[in-house]
Amino acid sequence: MAGPILHGVQVVLRPVADSDVPALEAMLREPEVARWWMRDTWERVDEEGSTVFAILADGQVAGCIEYAEEADLDYRHAGVDLFVGARFQGRGIGTDALRTLLMFLTDERGHHRVIIDPAVENERAIHVYEKVGFRRVGVMRRYERHSDGEWHDGLLMELLAEELVR
Ligand SMILES: CC(C)(COP(=O)(O)OP(=O)(O)OC[C@H]1O[C@@H](n2cnc3c(N)ncnc32)[C@H](O)[C@@H]1OP(=O)(O)O)[C@@H](O)C(=O)NCCC(=O)NCCS
Image (cartoon, rainbow, N blue to C red; front, side, top):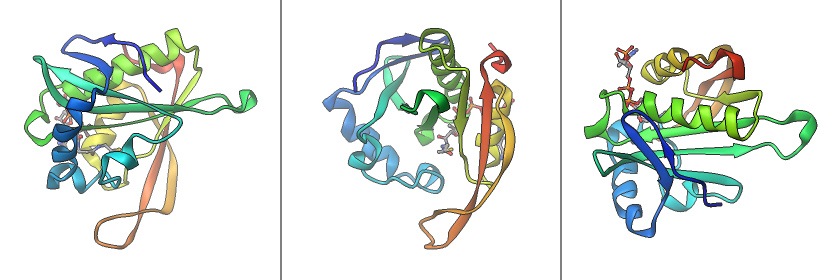
């Protein structure tokens, strides 16, 4: 599903173009990304039901951010996920991209609740998520299989619309 174009402070989020895919697939192969991002091919990222954006910084493709919406209106919420390529990490890009998408999901899409589920060991991601307002709900045990073949715990985090740090 193609999304709109969203403007952050440092980043622009726009629908992924076919010409972005080789750069994004190269990022998926980077150890700094692959350690924490399990879907290792583009087909596994761009799934039915997800809206996927390229993160642009200084006009370059720096990563990818996506959301999916629960269709049952009595459980309405969005789930989000992102990765930033190794050479773009640590420059505020992930924080700005996430905040920009969260403003869209709460202000434009009307979501009152958004979730995200990093690995328990992914301290950098958890720090970024708490910085924008996510709170820790609890540990999901043996939640996802990592490249070492082992099942690892995941941390369920949630943000209510009024908790977003803008
Ligand atoms: C996690 C990720 C999206 C964050 O994006 P980013 O652009 O690198 O992050 P930013 O530069 O915006 O912010 C990084 C913050 O983490 C902090 N940080 C860095 N390493 C850290 C660590 N080991 N533990 C805790 N905090 C850490 C930085 O100090 C900075 O916080 P600050 O602004 O308060 O000083 C990105 O690093 C990434 O894609 N990593 C690999 C894939 C991944 O983990 N995806 C998330 C899956 S849930």
